[in-house]
Structures are given as structure tokens and as C-alpha cells.
Length: 501
Image 1 (tube, rainbow, N blue to C red):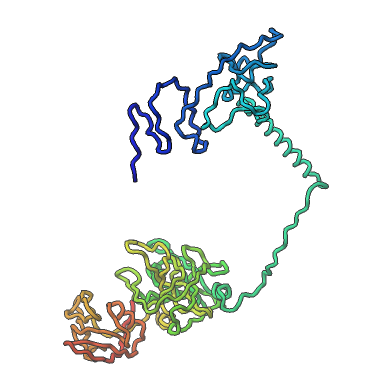
Image 2 (tube, helix red, strand yellow):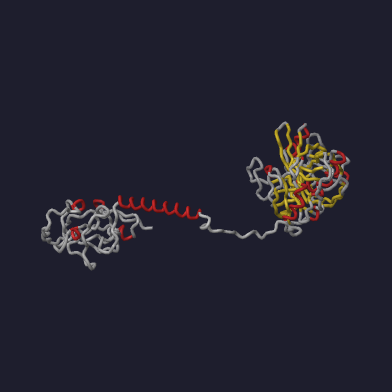
């Protein structure tokens, strides 16, 4: 960029490149510069001095025949020297400066030269100014007081016209009749089977909202009917306050409320069952979560932030996500279904259903950006407990009030860095690294061995191995790929069971 030239001595503006050079000459008295006009075209911003009035000899004006006639322009011409030539009629027009204010509205004005020829006695006007001189046939400018008077008159006329029109329209004979077209949508139109509207209509009557009042305050969440005689499935973290004597209130889709009793819960799977003393309820069917594939459309239903009966849609984003839900002292390991359907606080325990309206997951957790200390809302990363796991756990809770989970009988070293996960080399908190006579011990797994995969699925984190085992049932057999002393081998392990808290 080229910096602008500095002003010359005395603060004069630098000469423009497109202006011819001026030879030094005697400075004549200059007329005042034209005032800046912010609305003028670009030419008006040039620093051009106004041209001094042309010095033309002016003969004295003829005397009036009627010396006593009043000078209607005394106020406008006082203190000025007329420069127009003598001629018939009053000479004030030729003497009038085009930029002086006009007289009062209605004052007699002298005629301007006819034919558009310039008056030789009229001052020459700076051509860079915006407004042209007033000549005959052009609209004259009005004084400020006159403009105000016209504006007030126009407003009064407009108000009068509005009142008159309103009164005319008030007459029944003059009022126009307007009829808008009627809606053509039928209220009883059936939605296509499998549409979101059809799924919502099927699922919503069976989804409930829970409110738990305990010593730590009030917790809210969602749930859904498992059986027609009143069993309801939800998350453990929703009803944990009820385990310490809190009250559980269930709000149904039709608006009625009912108190509920905690039947059983499991911290390890973050599931719980409550029961209301009602019958004839409509249960939701639990689908086969093993048949879910990435990309399947799903619908999440629940009461986020207490907004009962909220429906959101999305797809299955991923499967077998290792998720730790809950507090450190009560961590649940979930082999979760990931979805981008909006899940927010309050959705916990609600169903995630497929295109047939079958429950394939129980909404339980959401991811948050790094640094977030609490769940603030959906960012498109929600997680649900697979329905096959929920079915097995719910059946145990209804039958026994407690649930079991499978184990292989080893402790894992969280400090290990490398391929796979490593069995701890030392006891932890008084517990042996490999449980004596446990499933792993019986299969020949020893402290320090590295487990590379389970049933052909590689594992790189401890959580991945834990949730893969928790997804099984006690008594199931799994195949582990184990490396020890530089040698790899496959071992078959039959899972044992442990009772959940």
C-alpha cells in the first residue's frame, strides 16, 4: 500500500494527480467554501473553492412609480447589493441569491428570467454544489415553518380520512365479506406402518416418567411398562434414592399418577425394576438387540428435563461401545448401543425402539465434551443398554430381587501400555490376580499374561474386555487369545457368576 502524501506547509491538501499544475499567482480574497454535504455525490467532496461573483457593472435600479409600495423582500434582501440589470418590473429576482432562504409561505416573489438564459448579473455558483439555483418553472424550497405546517396538515387529513373510512366500513352494507379456504387435511388419516408417527403412537402409552423423592433431593427419569400387572423397567441411577427409603411416583401417559415399590436393582448393569399396583397396562415388547446393525433407524422416547412423552429419532451409530456409567463407587460397565437420537437428562431408563416398535435398548448415558463436569445435553452421542442384557437382568430382578453377572476370575493391570490387556502380576487389595480355582485359573491363565481378543474381537482397553464379558451370561463359554512368554494360544473359558450389589 502507498501511504497518502503529507499536507504541504500551512496544512494545504496535496495536489491530486488528475489536476493540472497551478502556477503561482497572487492570491485573491476567497469566498467561503461550500459546506460539506454528507449525501452529495463524490464530486461534492472535492476541495474546490466557490467562484467569486462575477464583477459586472450594475446600473442603478429604476425608481419605483409607487415609492410608497412595500418591499415584500426586505427581509430577504437586506444588507445585499443587487447585481441584475434594469428591466421591466421589480428587480429583486435578478438580485436574489439562489442559496438564500426564501421568504414566508405566500409572500409575493419577483419573476425569474424567462427562457432559461442565465442572468448576467447573477452570481456564478460553485458547480460542485448539489442543489441547482432556483429558476423559473422549478419547485421552490419552503421555509422550515411552512414544511411543519404542511406536515401537520397532511397528518390531520390522513387521520380524518382514516376515521371516515372506518365509519364507512362499519356500515353493514359496505363491509366486505372474506372467506378463507378450509383445511383439507383429515384428522383421522392413518400414518404408514413403520413411520415415526406410527411408532410413537404405539410406544407412547407404555412410556412413563418417574419422580424419586429421597434424602438427596428429587430425581427424575423415564421408564416403560414390562408387564401388564405393573412391572416397570428403568435405570438404577434414577431410583437409587428409593433404596434408602425414598418414595417413587410414576406418571403415566394418560396423566394419572401411582406410587411404586422398588423391586430390585443392580449397580453393575445400571438397571432397576419398580412395581405399581395396577393391572391391564400395555407392555412394550423387548426386541433382539443382537440383530441390530449400524445404520438402523431408531426412536428414543422419554421425559428429558421433565418434558413427558418426548420423541426423538436417529440411527444406530455404533455397537459394542464400552461405557462406564455412574459414579466411581458405583460404576456400571455397559456394552452399549451408540445412537445419535437426542438423549438428554431425564431420558434415562426410557426405551430405544426399532422400526417395528420393539425395544432394542434402554437409554442410559450421554457423552459430554472434555472438561464438562456434568451432563449438559445431547451432542449426538447417546448410549443404550442392549435389550438382550436388559431382558436377562430384569427377569432376575423380578424373580429374586437381585441380579448376577459373569466373571472370568482375573484382575487387570490398568497401568499396562501395549497391545491387548494384561492380567495383574500382583494381588490388589488382598485379592489374588488370578482367582484360585476360578474360570481363568482352570483354563491355564497366569499373572502377567496378556489377553489379545475375546471371541475373535480384539481388545485394547480393560473396559473393552470387561463389557464383552458382561454381555454374556454366567455359564457361557468364550475363547480368549492369550500371549505368554512370547507365545500365543487360544484358551476356552467357561464364565462363572457373581451377585450384583
